[in-house]
Length: 106
Length: 106
DNA sequence: TAGCTATATATCGGGTGCCGATGTATCCTC
DNA sequence: GAGGATACATCGGCACCCGATATATAGCTA
Image 1 (tube, each protein chain N blue to C red):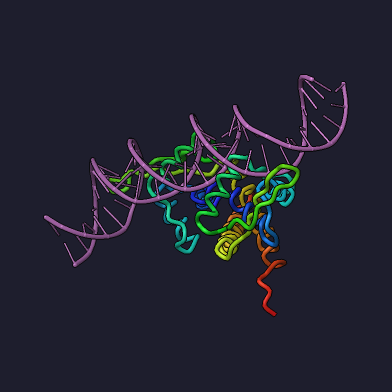
Image 2 (spheres, each protein chain N blue to C red):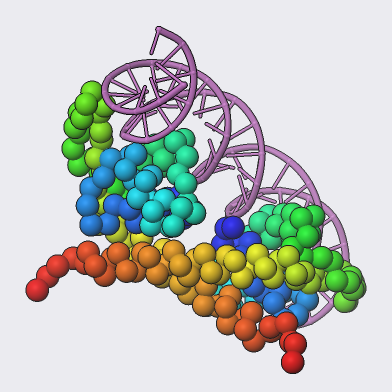
């Protein structure tokens, strides 16, 4: 799983959100580091919905702008958990290796 | 950075290795989870060498089979460290979110 | 000796997912 | 009325991965 996809799932933990709000939440969660480009966002939402990680929760129209809310499904929650575990483990390996073979300077 | 690339850099921390040995080390480091396909491996080695993350250390011929050893360069070491940090942080966010909004039962 | 596995590298075609650009539409502010 | 924020959709191109295929040596075994 790539980072944009991960942050989409992450943003949906706890509450259903519409696409644009997902992008904003991803940005705030990541301290501004992760910007979901429009093509990435809507493409990923469609893909994730088709494969059952997320589902359309409801649609609204606010001030003439339609909003499509997505919710995290069980499958998506599991995928997020698995990915978090995978990254955590990989990160530990990297940090340990870099520690053990650090640039030795006294 | 994708997982295969990450594990290639990781495998090279501490000692130069040739392509095939990198694939074996990636597999053992990841407890068998990460298998570097040939196309991935040699493609990535070429790419990483071209962009300065790794460099050809030396070439040997053992039993008629040639081996090309790669070493991790400073840039690759930094990239690995940055990636480990990124993954660690993303993993923490995911685990925290899943904890806070866990499937409430009891 | 023929076949399989392991070692070792190279290349090609296809697929996935990301991204920037572009388009549509509404609303608010200056 | 121009620009920016909100909101979604689509398209082309790119990066990277992956399986398949190829080449070559060596060891084991049936």
